[in-house]
Length: 129
Image (cartoon, rainbow, N blue to C red; front, top):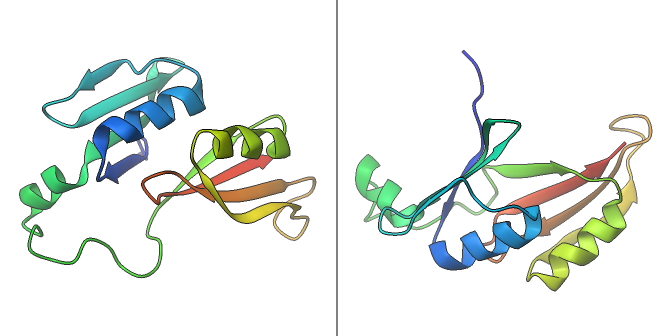
């Protein structure tokens, strides 16, 4: 089994597309507004997919349940050249810092990270090493 790509289930599909379009600096390969589906490719392979949370809840039969658990169940990890600059850029686009930039030698030699939430509340880790 191969991991394919992260799929973020989002509440506000148009806002999420706008955020990731600006954050990634590239246009999505496909945006199907009525289906609440968008994807970005990296080197010809899916790199990120957004999908409407309500659509998925309907498909899997959880539409009547509370929207989210108390703790995160997914995180999008993005490699950047400069964590501090990347953090500043995402904040300007509407992200919120939840753990500021810091070196994490206990995780890996030379690793620096920051953790943010996108406008949908999804957890993002920026990392450089």
